[in-house]
Length: 320
Image (cartoon, rainbow, N blue to C red; front, side, top):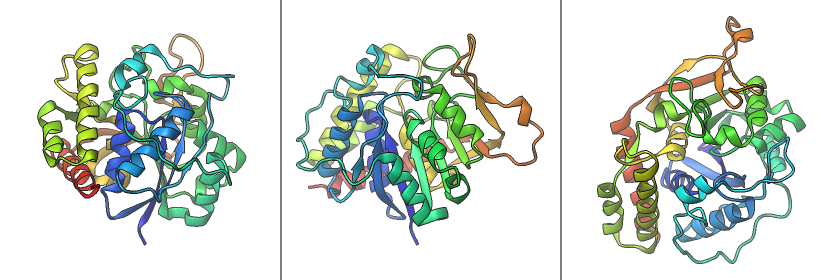
């Protein structure tokens, strides 16, 4: 039986690449996308999810409306830096046709997550690449899913390197630190794909040209979108020499966990004081023999980049 994947996205540029990677991975099935906030508002994310899956030839993928703001907030506003990096529309300000489809109305993202865990159990991998609000809400509503789910592969956090929101906080965690702390403390099996590894996986203009040369509407869109992202990185992180492949690396690890080496450690998020938002080992559970989190500390860069370019190239070429 194929592994079932749910992508939980605040659909910006690298979320789009995560969708493309999973759709280009024949060994898994994308059973749904749940929307969250971060790079864009939930409404824009839903629009992007529907339009992107249509463009890539996969209009069968349902999209569910997720939580629109953090657990302890009443609203959410996209930051200026997010709009600069991802564009005002989240996908590099590239225009693609709106989908005639709409988000599912029979259930919310949270209920879809719970229902899917009950249905597929250990065959289901949940991949949140934005705020952890949807999965935290699901765990609060149905705590039993922590023991039923096959795994949660999250993009977020930083353990051995600096943050990118401030000196210690990664951007996704900054959107809802309480939600990520709930996830870490829930006992659910979590693999954290943080800046420790994602900033070692880079895409350049030379790589985007490979997709451009495929010359389909989907490949041209992906190339133009990534070029926008690389250009933003030239301002924010000129030392890297490319753009970090954050969300697609989490998607790739959901497909093939051997792409990374992990440190087993029980994690927490600092919620008070100057280090609010820091992802760090939980001293109170340091000696607990059961480690519910695995933090990626090494990545097979060459193998991942080969899979990344090949799988996304394949799905872009097939979407005529």
